[in-house]
Image 1 (cartoon, rainbow, N blue to C red):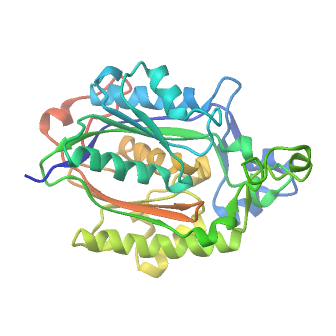
Image 2: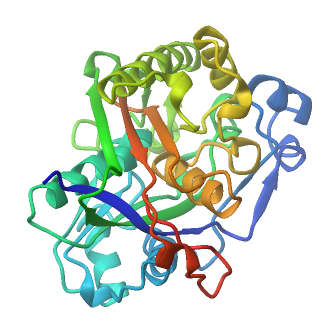
Length: 346
């Protein structure tokens, strides 16, 4: 009997503070028109005074657990995708586990924007092999702390958010159907933070040179992203015995609307097949795909029986994709949680 992981709960947390393009124009040499034309981004959320990686992740996780009808003590494993921890040591997963009141193992995957899909694939395999039954996969980032607000090529692109899903086993023709994980470390310096690690430790020189902030070769990353969005989407659907045209919805990494539009054109796909929320949140790195997935479910864009393709790309340079098929029972459809979200199972 084929056992797969399917999504039975989901939740999100976005900070209350909104930073618009007009706000950024007061800080750095840019404009709303310039940002929208090149990225499709209109605003993003940034952490509030009391927001931490742990608190944001825990808020999203609690919502996901509530939708799944689970308590923290029911969890067998917590996987956190994150590149912006509260502290360099220990892993944010440990703090999140403690904050939730869970007693299961927990670890962090630092794969940048691809991290949550890496986590989805990892959680799926723990369930597929029968090791665990209830796995929580969280994507959370506070990217704003690593942005140089004198550099308009990077500070306009990112935002802060958290989103989470609960994975449980199914033997139906549903759940995680295929996945692909990839890395090309030869391109790592195109998107990185050059200072603060063991090679170039924190020092006055690092701070003076602003090397503790994100630096990016935008053109190279954009070319890489478009190629991987197309090739990974084609690969994961081929593994599932379908084509991108057969997907009911595509959830791409929300980095740049122009990248998505260009990939759609080259693949011959209509834009209404893609779920887009980059205009509201910008690039939230590891939180991007799950945040879009949660909103797609809540907005009714994901329906029972749908087949969804998800592709992420980012620092590393890395990429990751998965095909997930909806599987729904009538009893699950009938459940509505306190926030009014209809419970379905992927």
